[in-house]
View 1 (cartoon, rainbow, N blue to C red):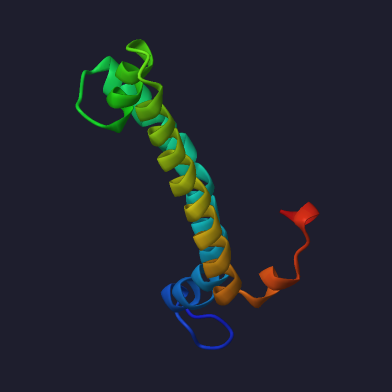
View 2 (cartoon, one colour):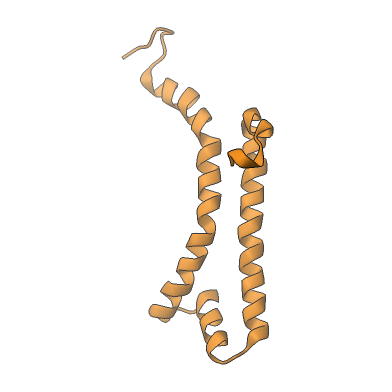
Length: 105
């Protein structure tokens, strides 16, 4: 099927729709990253997988607060860094994002 500009449906989807939705998709994926990291804590604890989530739970059980603080700091830096990187990437991909105020986020 061809459109008025003699473009196929696939060309319209890949050329116009994907370009318009890509910044929002990237930003939503970055916002979901803290939830994914929080889910790893639960999954690693329940299924006894080795990883940062199980280390956090074990250090909390053993009152090893230095390790727990380091893990929380690392998780926070990753979450904030992903949000900042996504916001900056979205600003370069879509110029309309530069004119947004904090209330519009």
